Length: 275
Length: 232
Image (cartoon, rainbow over all chains, first blue to last red; front, side):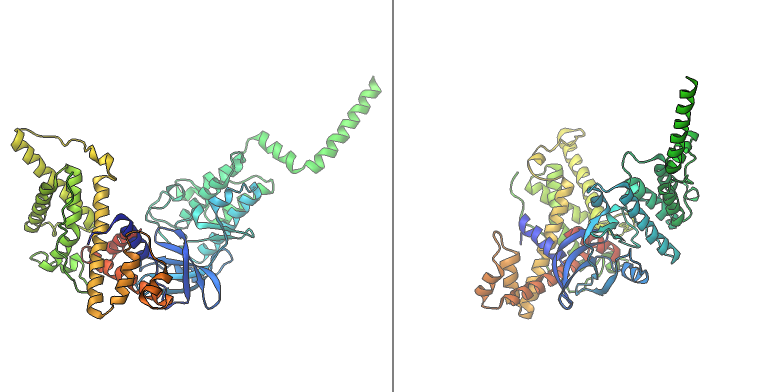
């Protein structure tokens, strides 16, 4: 038989839909598409709540088991994993109401809010690295910022077939320093045009082509961001003297302004006396 | 351009569990059943590709397509396929391109006594897609057409005519699809039964598509990739 274009497109669409017969879930609509699978909005009939249902084409994916081992407020918990009647693997996860990092930036958050998101991502990475797990495909689309400001790192352990080049470390053999590279790329991504050179330097150090020249671990990068926010010198940047003085002035403004005012008054009194 | 041929290769019914190309291959080459599967799926895409790429009319394109498959079967075409380098679909399309180009060139040299460069195909602008896209689209069309045939055969064999009719009424509708309520009234069943029958038919269809693909791929990894290409 000959299928028209419209019938063919319809058949392709319905063939791709997961058959949830025999599960507790009811399909509602597609909400995302990644390298290895599709994420649907589904309703859990037993608990009467919505979940994110990820359906994979590959039978080899171990993301669900991997996430189940990583219990952290910044990692979306997996409720259940299983196999559909057609052999595809699925797992149900908490539905995060929020936006991916790139969408979050469209709301023009402040620098502090942007850095806070990066620090949360870094904390999640540090947690995972301490347990011997690396992310492999950290990019803005894999970071969700929830409505209450909570940050989730998603799509764990997926060695993307065609990862986003801007966030992927150049080395072929990925390890936790490759995640540090991606974290630096994320920092660079969230920085506004007017960002301080010290922040750019932190991102650049993390994104060094030579893995040994990067931060050795995520907490070291986070510490540099924290130093910047506290008005201290960052390790990634040897600042010029005038910048150091300006930073000193900025940090000690409360002390310096009375001193300047006192010196001004003394000078004024001196001038009045000699005139 | 004259209308496309109605020939689409043999439409046989295949067992529900297919061997992959590599599993089916023996020292003497592919057995007939495995070859039939390849020809059934690829005859039409190859034919359309040749028509589009080399501006062949209906009969010439049919002849070239037939020659390609005959030539491929006579040579060690399947033995030279290396799944590490490309999918079988890509390997076959590139082989068709080389074969048709050499045949086309030889034919023109005979007629005009010299090498002939292919002219740009002006009519391509009027229709949609490059020859490669046409090949891909026809591959999808043929794949689903064969799977629908398989589904019909299966339904006839196991008395699932009602499920088939609902599938045909809804998923194969040429224009506006009826509502589930209208289908339920038409077949005098509950609306939930319409949903269940459709879900069953779609699950079977997906299974038949997968089986068809299994017969023309070299292993699980290629099969998964081709599945994604078929419906994403």
